[in-house]
Image 1 (tube, rainbow, N blue to C red):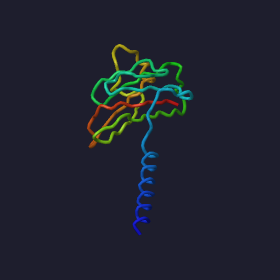
Image 2 (image 1 turned 180 degrees about the vertical axis):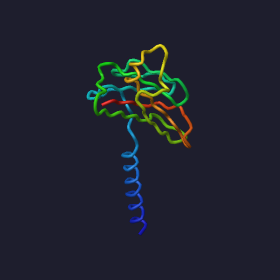
Image 3 (image 1 turned 180 degrees about the horizontal axis):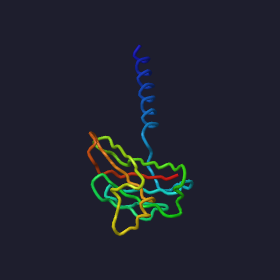
Image 4 (image 1 turned 60 degrees about the horizontal axis):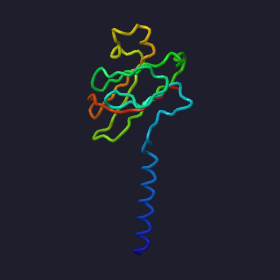
Length: 138
C-alpha cells in the first residue's frame, strides 16, 4: 500500500511541475524575426535590446513611452503585446495605449504621437509600479 501511495504522489508532483512549467512565461528576447518592432525594456526605462524602436522614455512611475520607427506599418490591424519580465512580490498588469497624452513631449512634433505607444504598469490594487517588460508589435 505504501508503494502505491508513493507512486501516486510522485506522479501528481510531476504533473503539477509540468503544468507550472507550461503556465510560466519563458524568458523574453528581442530577437523577433517576424515582428515589425520589438524591445526589451528595463524597469528604469532603459532599453536592453530593440528592433525598429527609435526612443524610449519613462515620464513617471509605471508609465513607459516607446517611439516606433517609421518603417513600422501602423495602418489597419496591428497587434501590440507586452509581457512583464522578472519576479515580483505582487502580480503585474500591463496595458498599452497608442498616442497617449502621457507621452507627449514638447521637443517632438505632433505627428510622432501616432507612432508612440504608452505602456502602463500596475501592481496589486492598481497602483503604478516599475516593471521590466518585453514589447512586440506585429
